Length: 413
Image (cartoon, rainbow, N blue to C red; front, side, top):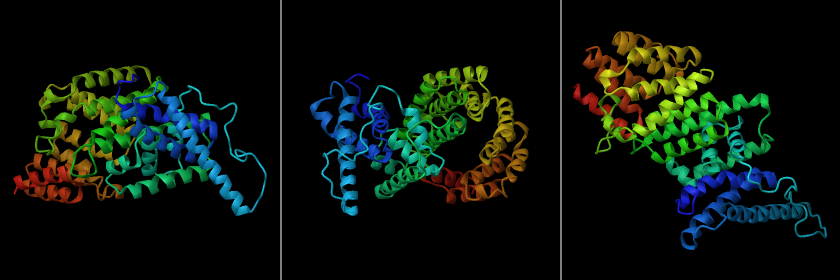
């Protein structure tokens, strides 16, 4: 990247490279990650005034190395005091120290860091937070703002995540070959969660968070660069591009939600749609079929329709039926119900939707009531639809969704 590139973008690109160089050298992921964050903050303060160094990666590695060395020396001194051990040693003795075979190189450790941040010992929320900080280069404050929690809460979550990884005995290396497919699916899921939180924020005044969707797409591009032959990574990137392409049309000037059928498709990003369609077309032709590819194919059918009436719902229904067979889950059933209603009528969709009523995972999910309201409205039952819209509005914590659902209910009053 050139020195004219925005400093923030450059720092995000360099963050995993610098962390990889340090973790490979010092074998202390938690200390190295803290040191890299301090170096990134120092760069963010100094570079706008002093200019970007000729070797920004080297600058960050040097500054972060000093931080981690100081931290390790302090830790060694603390242990010595506690153990009341007196020894006449060199100032650097007792440090884990750099391995002669692990000095900083140009090797890209992004994949290793992604696997580490998505360690199975961590909860999904912790995996997301640690990935955004260690790989995305976001500060704790930025991540906290994105998820609308206090910075102290997010700092504790990240600190606990690093402690959990350390306690689990995780090493800075790729997992064994036999574990990689399952771990890779976890990495994809974390990137998918980051994107979804950005595309429809679960709470707060904003419908979407472009910073998170942009970061998810960037990280998924990096993952595809590292594993170009993986069809599901291609499918995930295609899904993100095809979905994010509609971003500009999803909210009106007042910030209120605009449903897919009512969006101005002239506002959709045709370049992103073209890239997404090409990606999913290639993946479907060359790779084993997977759920992200099927979801991307569904998004492509929506995006390629010139208007809502021209949507090929029969093709979408067939794709959802296939998706239910290879990756059944309640959210797939929920969307499947909509497609079924568009092809075979609202009652067919309502019947399928009713199968979710006993699923505890969906008990408080507002989208079940929102979809039920939509299908009841299609079926000519405005009173029942109004009740369902009101219940959905009460359950969501997204203010734009609350306004939209309450508005639909009021229209039927």
